[in-house]
Every structure is written in structure tokens, then in C-alpha cells.
Image (cartoon, rainbow, N blue to C red; front, side, top):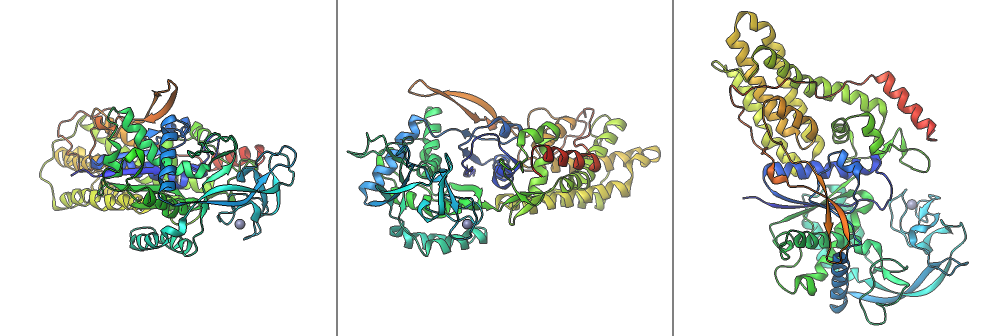
Length: 569
Ligand SMILES: [Zn+2]
């Protein structure tokens, strides 16, 4: 029975091109995860807020990749706000707000910089410190200054709505305690956080964003909902938008009100509390109420898992666009293949601890782990089988060793599958490399390229066993290395796609405006998460190497020179 898996990706607030730090922790991992579930045959709904050509080039596949300025989004956000308000979960409070003295205009939190009162980092923002990861209020900053003109902001009393988080403290504590499948860092961090919950502002003094749907507030040009509040609701509003897009306006209920559907959120560690505490509180408060849900069906689903990565640094330093410590995804992909990057990030990325990207390490893992094991295995198997037989050879009698190897490789579907489903990506990839090494060893021991002169049938059998193993590994590698698995799929003589590719589509809304979404019809794919059963006699196509070996001296020297030129010394 197919499961419904909802995959949400929280991107950091940022404009401009994606850099490696953006995609390392959750962009690529969430894509690997969604691709795995599609191969299993589960229904996957994957959503994120930022559209970008860089992400498509990296192969990131989405069901709906949209923006939060749509009319649909406004309607849903206002419905959630109004429902929480009617149920008494919003508190009106007077607090200090920051304004620019010269203009009287409000200064959004992110436009205020100062010294972090917790760790002393000199460039903390008004909403958060990027050094220690703590959430901040602007008036907590030491020596606050406007990022717009450097002036000292003035603080004035201003009225706002706060989400009554303490009202949810007990249900949240119970719920988080039960989530034994979460990564320990996420669970512990969240339990600590809820021990001291305070009401949190969900409106701001700002002139853009979703208006507040209450009399006396709705028409005010200077009060809007806070961007984090509407951002998390974006996960829900996107499902409502998608249901409208496919012409079944209630279809979102299958995802959000079926207690068996499982929701996975991928993010960096600075976003954990939004997804383990604040968003769940909003969901608990909303229940099935409001105009959108109409009081029908189950309460909206809470997250099943919140998968948080740690930070990626580069050559020992934090990524920083302003300081030139940065590798843009599009720039990277102009010189290297997307699968090489995906491989590196899954093997050496910040899955459970902070990790450091270095060019030397990238080249070493590409050459010694990707090219030398999996790349070498696939290539020499295909080249020999294609040259000697031109098709999948008819095997003779399989020896016990042949059978054990096939069984071992095919048992990967359950072991690797368990790892991928639990978001243990590095472990999955290590198992795949281990299985590749076993098949490599089998080829080296049996030497079909020598056998061919003396025992053609045995040579054919050995190549058949290797081809079957490669075919199975191709499917298991596909979530991580989609581009090369597709090539291999074709070299093995198959047609169609192992897994669908994302495409860009333009959507017209009810107000006549259009926007682009990244989406895909993944139902046409031929791959499934099971041994493919390679047909004997299937014609093979001329193979090419799947991956490129990189010259360590050239790559490291060139890339470090490039970085220096862009100011990142
Ligand atoms: Zn700090």
C-alpha cells in the first residue's frame, strides 16, 4: 500500500544565486529522500519556497515549487491567523519596535545589526545570531545599528499580536518526547527550548506582507504579518494551491488530514525551533477549524520528522557572500558534474556534524571513492559485455559464489532503503560503495576479459552476474546520482527514465497573474525500488565513462586562485 510522504524544505531567507552551503545540508538530502520514496512507489509531495534554475541543474526535483505572494497564500494565512485569534491563541501586546530616526520608518529585524548579547558575535542580526544560532529581538542587541544607513535605531512602543506559545507547552512536551525517531540533536534542542516558552510576535511594523484580517487592522499600511509566520504556513497553503491546480480543491485533505500521511521537514539547525515547536503550535491551534478546512476532517498533521543538518564551512571558514567565501551552485556546475557534487555532499556533508568543504577533499572523494569504485565497476562491466557480446549474455550455470554475490547486492534494497527512509544518507551511500567494491572484487578474481579466450560461456556468466549487480546498484544509486544512473540505464539497453526529471511550468492564477513553478510528472518513470530483472539478450548500447577523474593539482590550484580573485583570501 503506497504511503503519502510530504517533504518540505525550509530555505534560509536569501536572494540571489544558491551557494554550496545552501544545498549541502538540506537541498540535496531532501531531494535524495523524495527520489527514494518515488522509486518505492509512495506518493510524494515535495514543496519549497524558492525557485531557481541552479536547483534544477543540480537535479532537485519538486512537485510544487512556488512563492508566497500568491492570492491563495494570502487567503490561507489570513484564515490561520483568524482561526487562532477566534480560539484565543493570540495575545495583543505592546512592545518596543525599532524605527529609523531620520525617516520614521520601521526597521525590520533583519536590517538591524549589533553585538550578540549571548555569544558576543559583532554582526548578529535583529532576528537571529548567525554565530550561535539563537533567536533574538532587536532591542537585545548591544550597540544596534541600521544596516541601511548605519544609524542608531530608535525604539518606540508599538502594538502587536503574539502567538501564545505557553498555551501549547504541555501538548508540545508530550509530543516531542514521543518522537524517538528524530535525530537526537533535534529532539534535545527542542525539549530544552520548550522548557522556557514565551509568547512570540507574529505581526510587525512593516509595509509589505500579508495584511492582518481584523477590523481596525486590515487597512493599516504599517502593520503586517511577520514573514516567518507566513513562511511556515506556506507549507500548507502550497498544498491548497496544488489541489486547485489539479482541479480537485479538496485533494490537499489527503495529505494534511490523513493520519497515515507522514510529513518530513528538512532544514539547517538554525531553523529547528520553527519546525519542532512554533509551526506545530500553530497546527495544534488551527486543528481542523477555519474557512479552509471548514471544521471537517482530522486536525492538520504535525511533522513526522524534522531532519536538521549541521553547518557546512568552506576551507575552514563560514560561507559569506560579502567576504567572497562562497561557491555558487551554478558556477560549480559550469566546471563539474551535478552527480559529483551530490555524491560529495551526501558522503561528506554536514549530516550529523559540522563539516568542511575543501577542494582537495572534493577531488580525493571524486577520484578515490566515486570514480575508483562505482564508476570503475559500471564502466568495465559495460565495456567488456558490450565489446564481447553486444547484449546481456546468456549465463551458464551459476556457481554458489555467483548466487551469493547477486543475493548480497540485491539485499541492498532493504538495507539501503531503510537508511534512506530514516534520512541516514551517509550510511546508505557507504553501503552502496561497499556493495560496489564486492562486485569489483568479483570481477578482479574472475577476470572475464581473460576467460573469454578459453571459456566463452563462463566469461558470459561472470559478465551476466556483474551486469545484474550493476543494474540493481543503478537503481539504488538513482536517488543520490540521478544523472549517471539514467545514462547507465540507457547503456544497459533500457528505454524510458529510471526516475522523472523536474520541469518548469507557468501557472495562471484566478487573478490572472502567472508564476513559474518547478514540478514534474514522476508517474511516467519506469524504475521501482526492487531488483530490475535484467532481460537476457537485451541489446547493450555503447558505454561512455559515467564520471570524470579530476587532476588534483590543477583543480585545487585553480579553485583557490579563483577564490582569491573574488576576494576570499
Ligand atoms: Zn550569538
